[in-house]
Length: 167
Image (cartoon, rainbow, N blue to C red; front, side, top):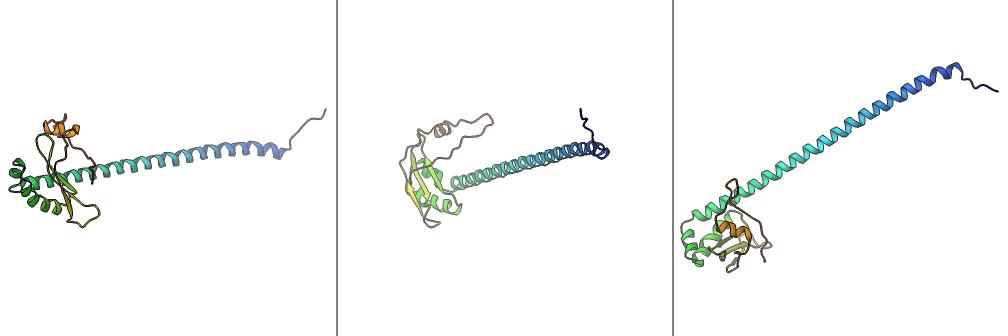
């Protein structure tokens, strides 16, 4: 029977080769783990930043809408014209404020949710071109019903919504 024997060089090289292979494997695992965790952390940070930017944009948009609302309600003659359903006065006063505020649309509703007067900017028209509307029924929209009842959420905020309206 022939005995298998390794040379002295092979006996020295094999343990060091296995040790080098083990160290390289552990090193590759550690480096890969660090790269993946750093990449995941970077993605998470970017998602948080994007969420904060969107939130800030929504707040700016809401503040702009509130400024427009205050400007419309603070204009002499508008609250009385809305209460008296005087569309001629509303048509004379409201569009100027809406155009200057860069708002797309403003609607005046009565206590039943019926549109007294509305003005919408034309999407494909000039900056100051708009269409006047009246008579639409918004009373069946749940958020309008809550607003008409002056309901507020747990934090005391009034309800708002975004709705598309026919052109």
